[in-house]
Length: 464
Image (cartoon, rainbow, N blue to C red; front, side, top):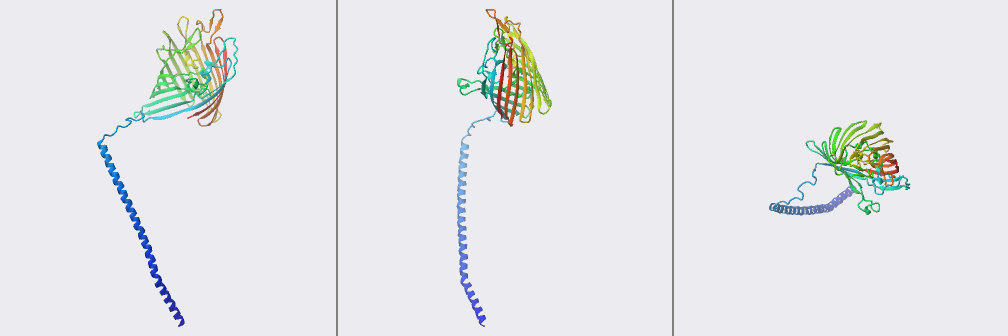
C-alpha cells in the first residue's frame, strides 16, 4: 500500500513538471520562428531594392541608346582614318631572318700592312695583298682587326593567288658599308653603313631585281670562317638583272660594267658608263642525292668610249656527296673578259693599247674544298683556290715602262693568286657557330714580284 502511494506521488510530480515546462518550450519555438520570419522579410526587401535599381539602370541605358540613334540618324558617319588595309597585300605570308657575325683576325703580310679602311682588313681580298717595289725591304708587325660588319638581315613576302600564280618579294642587307665620318670610324663608334645585298621580286618563273649573277653557283661555295674564303677561285657578282627559269635551265640579262686597264700605270678603271648591251648569262643545273652539277655561260659586250670588244666565258661547278659526313665542292671558270666576274675583279676585263684599241684579257680560276663532319656539332673544311690571267705583254707599256734614263720600272699587274684555308667550326647549340680558320695566300705580279699573307681568324655567328 505504501509502495503504491509512493508511485502515485512520483507520477503526479512528473505530470506537474511537464505541465510547467510545456509553455516554456512552446514560447522558445515561437521566438525562433519569429526571428526567421524577420530575416526572410529583410532579404525580400533587399532583393526588391536591387531589382528596382536594376530596372532604373536598364531604363537609363535604353534612353541613352535612343539618343545616340537619333544623333547617328541626324549626322552622317565619319570618314574612317584609313580607307585601305595597311598592307598592300594582306594575304601575303611574311618571313624574316639573318644572323649576327663577329669576326676577329690577326694578319701578317710580307710587304707591309694592308691599308686601314681597305676591304682586305675585313675579309680576304687577293688584290689587296701588298707587294713592295723592287729592292724595297718592308718590315711590319702582325696587326689585329675586330668587326661585326657582315651581320645581316632579310625580309620576304610570299603570296599565291587563287589562280596559282606565285609571287615573292625579297630584300636583304648587311652592315658592310663604310662609316660616314671620323666619329664613325674605328676611332670612336665603328659605324658601318647599311649595304643592299638583294632586292628582287619574282613571279612564277620570272625574276627582276638585284641578286646573285646567274653566272655564279652559290651552292658550290664551301663553308668558310672568312666572308668567302676561296675568293680568287670563284665567280662572285651581285647585280640587277631580269631572269627566266624553267626547270634546271635559266637565262638572264644582267647589268653591264666593263673594267679597263691602263697600259701606262697598270691601274684599273671601274667607272665604265659607256656599256650599251646587257651581259647575257645562261645556266643548267642537275641535282640528285649525289649532290649537284652546274654549267654556266657568259656573253658580254666590252666597251670603252667608242671602242668595243666581245667577251665570253664558261664556268663548271658542283658539289659531290661522299657518304653521310663528307662532300667535295669545286669550281672551274675560264674566258675572255672574265676579269670582273672572278675573284672580286682580281683581273681586268680589257686593256686599251697606245693606239686606243680595246683588247679583251683572258683569265681563269677555280677552287676545290673538302668538308668533313666529325659529328652533328663539329665540322672542318680544307680549301685551295687559284686564279691566273694571261695579260698581253705585247701591248705597249704592259708590265713595264722605260723611264728617261732607260731604266725598266716594273708595274703592279696581277698575274696569279692562290690561297689555302683550313677551319674548324663548332655548333654547341642550334644556330650558334663558333669557328677558327688559318689561311695563307700569295699574289704574283707580271714582273715576278710577289707578296704573301698569313691570317688567323675566329668568328661567332648566331643565325635567326
